[in-house]
Length: 177
Image 1: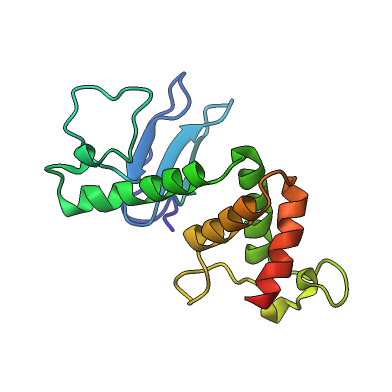
Image 2 (image 1 turned 45 degrees about the vertical axis):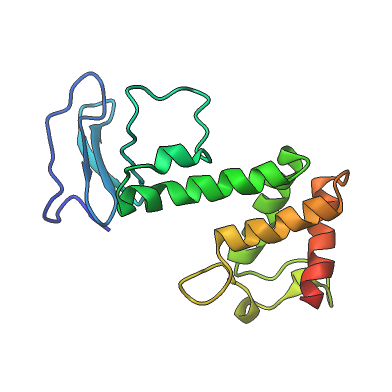
């Protein structure tokens, strides 16, 4: 992660707009700005920014990324950049209630990323800290799309259920998987 003293992070004079510079590199986005007294400060935020150059003069507000004609004449990097959005749109099109899906998925991801004990004894929520933190493709665990597919399946099985019921049913089924 960049800091203000590292190579590549530049400090500029503050102006009335506040943020004076954004600099991107492989580590993240460095934002420089100033506070109310005009003191220059540097904040580094790690982001995953994707870019794809589409052969369109303007982007319509209702752009359907699932349209295969958009991928025509794109290089592999641009196609890979669009893959995440295309998969997300595909999953969302398969669930009956998008709001329920989003809320249940948020809860499941929070559980998967957490490393603290919570829940009741002898329930899927009461795993010890060593058995948690199971959100990471890089470490061989399930990642974002995998969790989304599992939650989407629960939403399909229980189309009229509330998000809390989807989460509960998820753990009952997940325990058997």
